[in-house]
Image 1 (spheres, one colour):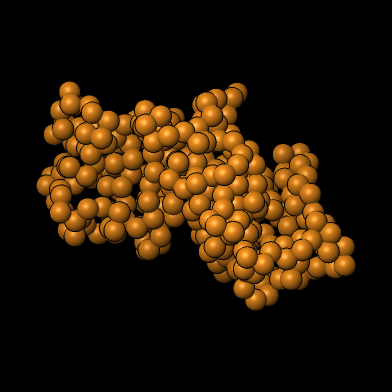
Image 2: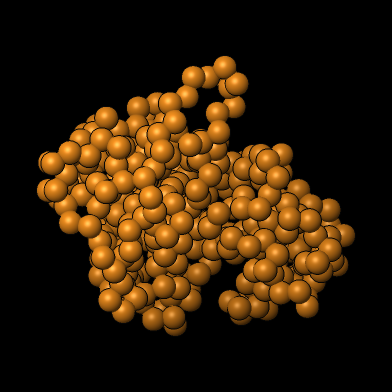
Length: 307
């Protein structure tokens, strides 16, 4: 089966700051891929570069077999119906001056689809995300955080995309509302045959929704594999640190807390050798060398001292 999204050696710089230093991953049709990392790891830049909203100076981004990196906005516009973005801020990403009806049907106007029955489409989209049809007449300030996020999902689904790029889909929501939204996304993926790339720092979100996941550090993937494999047998020390800090729902579970040293280094002064070595709890002299990306049984790893 051909990948719906194939990213290879994606590189993005802002001036002299190399934000993405060669990111590669793929997403299969109907699959959810999660990218995890601390703030500043480059997660948001990855999906913005895929969508053509951030510069990508090198590498390849193929969507459904077509190279899309470097396309002009005019050339990219027809593809916007197949690739939809869900933004992080559920309220701030919605214009406060227009109704929900206009917000979720705006993609039709952008694409010049004048034949669409706006009222009927608004009702259909609201039903998809389990909101009553009368919500079409509300304004963003009249929505709760969870309702606003559902409106964002409805808007993303308007053009029946093949791929959803979601930036922190549960950010700022209560735990119970997070669960409802994740169940909705899982249901929509299965019913509509969607593929999704989700970026988050919330590992409970990843475990709930993702088929595969990648761990990003300083704009490089350091580990990648099935979600089950990485949660059950993480190999990179950074992954161990992230998982050890994740709240465990089982109160009887015995957790080994592994503290990360300090803050991520500046992208202006990347460490030599392994870029994680200055914070790594198991670093040794061998980490002065630069680790290579190696894949074994579909589990990718960039580390000289794996656990």
